[in-house]
Amino acid sequence: MSDHLLPHDAALERLRRLHPKVIDLSLERMARLCRDLGDPQDRLPPVIHVAGTNGKGSTVAYLRAIAEAAGLRVHVFTSPHLVRFVERIRLAGTLITSQALADLLDRVEEANAGQSITFFEFVTAAAFLAFAETPADLCIVEVGLGGSLDASNVISRPAVSVIAPVDLDHKEFLGEDLAQIAGEKAGIIKPGCPAVSARQRPEAQEVIEARAAAMGAPLTQMGVAFDAWAPGGRLLVQTEDRLLDLPLPALPGPHQIANAGLAVMAALTLGDPRIDEAAIGKGIASAVWPARFQRLTAGPFGDKARAAGTDLWLDGGHNPHAARALADTIAELTARDGRSAVLILGLLANKDADGVLAAFAGSGVRVLAIPFEAEAAGPPERLVEAAEKVGVQAQACQNVEAALDLALSLPGPPHVVIGGSLYLAGEILALSEETWPR
Image (cartoon, rainbow, N blue to C red; front, side):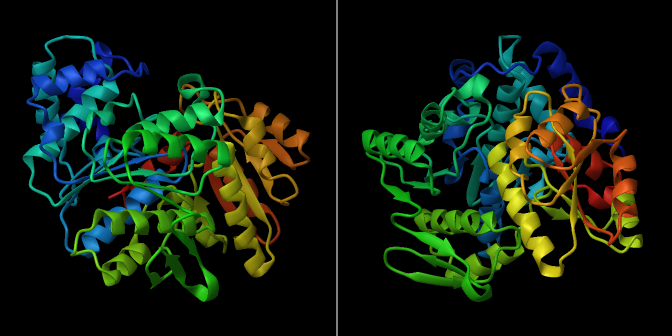
């Protein structure tokens, strides 16, 4: 069944008309709506609240897999979705049904009674209502944007606050420099509630440490109180009092060592006795997070690449920090067999194209720049211009299919990566039900 025929779609379309997708960061509207719903955010299972610029989705995926490997029932709230809106809300391990989501949205709309609200606040309130009414052992909530004023920050007593790596993105909403952005992310740290932070650049780390101290929140900092590395094909996580010897992360790329280590420390900080080392290892080795250097082996493009005798990958990194991680991951890939790599790239117009393309300077990666269907998609010519500034070979293509055909016609054939916007990744995954996130 195609998504536009599902029961929740009419409710979402009505809400988009009434409450357009503006970004207006504030907690007042959300707090008022939650009060009118009976404050569901105060009736959740223990919450792990996750903020950060990059890696927060992967960290959520590892945490979910670890908890489920321990036998826990886990609620998860993430954004954005890739193909179907229901991907955002997972109830006790299972994606919410379309009908259940439609019913929730109707209830939230009735409680809101036509008052001012943003679309994301509306959806977050619906998720919290579902989580409060469905039994579970743990709730993992990913911040939508920023932290201090994000709709999810009505959670007042998280079991653990987690801050993934902080970098420059969404500067128009969060601030022009790293310290300002870190201050927004650190806003999820609450009085007396433990916090765990990834390794941060000094100016971000200083802000996070200051917030934790002001809140009286015990802070466990990667690179200070714990660390993770991967010698000899194993993931080692060293804390102040133990060393965990674990399988390598399921998600590819050197940056996933740090993401997995952050998730391990958050799981240990939660302190649930059911989460033992065996569950942690099983979860790290089995986590799934679509469009984060995901190998595509199905769908029309996956089939085409396989028929041409090469591999196809999909990645949704769309800022310079994520692009550097992608460049490192592609370098690992090409080092294994000496084959070249082609990056089919599409970005939204408001993204830092110069910073993204600079990550591939000197890498030997060839870039094929493409348009895609999102209304805010940037022109391919802008990406070619940014690539040429840093000496990266690039050309514009008519669409992703033409770019893939060109890539597969090159000698080798090369490794092929489709990357950039998550909207582009969603378009690719939507082409076949086989590749829909489950």
